[in-house]
Image (cartoon, rainbow, N blue to C red; front, top):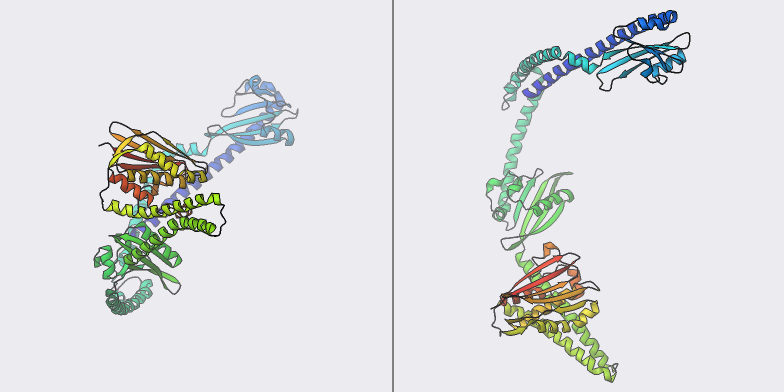
Length: 550
């Protein structure tokens, strides 16, 4: 408070001083400007009479001190000038004061120099022969005059500044001293300004009321702690400033904090940005929910705004451990999704073909083709089931037979298998290169099939899939490049997870199981290889598998 009073007095003093300087300078400048204009008018009157009497002879003999005389013809041409050769001067017909003199008999104007350091006053009068006689003089502008008086102004300003500081400090201390010594525990026993008596009386009443309310709140707080202490769910109460008001033992275990966190900002408990956003959402909309993973468990946060009347007083955070429920739901969803997505299409094809055969709606010559189609789709179903079994075998590191595998032939075989799918999608599938590798033939075929199958499924109509096989002295490389939709960067590290789908809606349309890339990853690892992906959304993806030669 002392600083505020000091600053107020000091600012007022400095403001008054600056205002006084500005006003005095303005008044003085206006006064001297008026004197100069009157003097200029008098001198022009005398000079005009002399020119009327003696003409050019007078102007040639006169040498005015501090002013300039210019004689201007009726067409604006300069007949004579006391400072400059008249022949070298430009026409003055457009000058403001000259135009006024031609029109009304007298004219006056002022103009600043290009540097704004001087102001020139002009006054003109029309003579009896129609010519104009003009007189001018230059004055310093206000900034130049102020600069010239800078030293005395600075001295005065510094003295006034020091005096203002001393007076402001003394006055502020005397004002604040009685206020600093008020006894807030016993407001009525203070001896201070009479104007504060109503305030001190009110403070005493509030002090007694607060003490009573505090006792009641303490009793309710103890009851609340007993109730929330037995809850398995975590409970955190925050005030409108985001500070922790209450936290039960379950919540303290979740955030791994002690009871000393009460009164601190919630950010000292947890700095998760998603949780912070959920709290802000609850403050605005009244309620929000959030699920977070922590220490291998899944937790659900139900956050509600606490209101008193129509005002928000804070938020309440309830924390539930929903790990078991989510795991059960996830297993059910994954099983249902895989069965519905992977079995539906081939089963419908088989049923459709069988129904046509059953109703004799197939020509005799086409019956072998339909039967072959049913057999191929049934084999596809078996293959899908085998995929799940294969993934389980790879997890358990089941021993599989190793042999020399021709990668070129394997890639061509899978290309032929997927030729129809590529043709339906209007995707060009090509295989280039060949190499031999000591590996598990079945796993090699599964790797090539899944990579090419995905490249076709997630390609664009009219796109292409290029399978390239190359080898060096130490490794064999297989790359599958497509011109498809691509994979966003945030998904590229997770696409090899089981049942993970970048675009669930697209996967439903294409019949993806979410197991293909997981099988590829485990098969590559089983064969001692490395797989990496390079992808740009909208520009396609390239999967590269590198096998080290044994």
